[in-house]
Image (tube, rainbow, N blue to C red; front, side):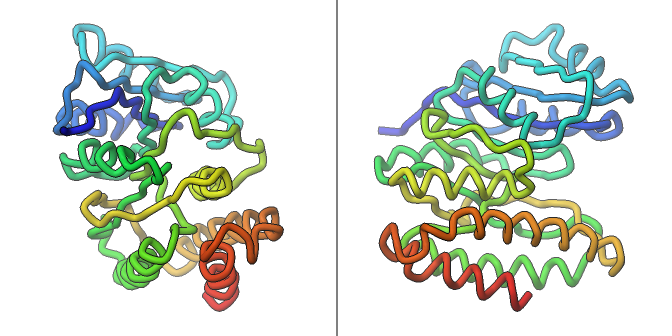
Length: 257
């Protein structure tokens, strides 16, 4: 029997007036019963994004809208904490305004989470918006690593544009967390559930080939992952093959790359 739990799609936004409506068009068109879907927008914008979101849902019965408004920008971790606290769905599906999803992501995500051993599932990037060849090569390598990790135990890196987990397993993030998506996954694995990558959950994310801009973005992401690995260093050689293989390999991978 197909599992159709209620789903809260969490969308953190900051000055997304140019693209937020197209993102909402995508979300309301996903292949899932919309009466079971709630869109939770956590917004700290000053460019009219909030007004666009409110107007978009004015005459819609489903999916429902929960708007979490913050008058100051406190970072994605704080926005996610507030959004998930306000969410009502059994499953949280976290995504980004500048990403694009295939229509089956909610069905595939909830099907994976129906397995009592699985607490979270992330997707695979299928292409890069912005014609970034370097990013495509990097993402291909990540997908290969994650396929192996999923078979062994659990993945380390989770992708914010396409990431689902059971709401009851969420632990609030530290305010200084950089790699928020992966931090959620690590906490769920430490809680005893597997975190997997399913390539049938496919997404597209913007990418840039300009070396300087890409380097700055990658450096911040790398620092966030290293911060997370350091904070969870006590998990190495714990939690089965996750601690014996996945975490040590992640240390090596991050240092080399």
